[in-house]
Length: 68
Image 1 (cartoon, rainbow, N blue to C red):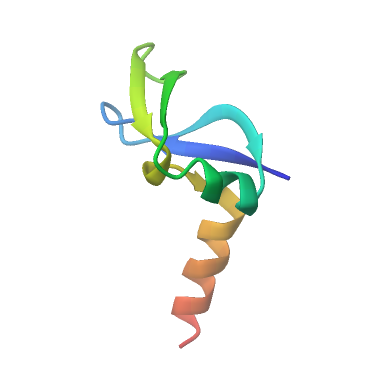
Image 2 (cartoon, rainbow, N blue to C red):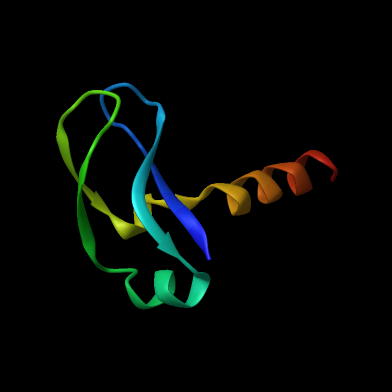
């Protein structure tokens, strides 16, 4: 299990959704929308699950691209 993050549309900073998930659950909820209270701007954002990411997975992909 890993924590799900999104990018705040106002500050462009990484923010946690407060949701812990795995790849299978993320795939099952792919078309869902989340309402998330942002710790950076204080606003409630409606974020598509498609716009979220698992931080470690994003970092791993970035590292792989740098090594090509």
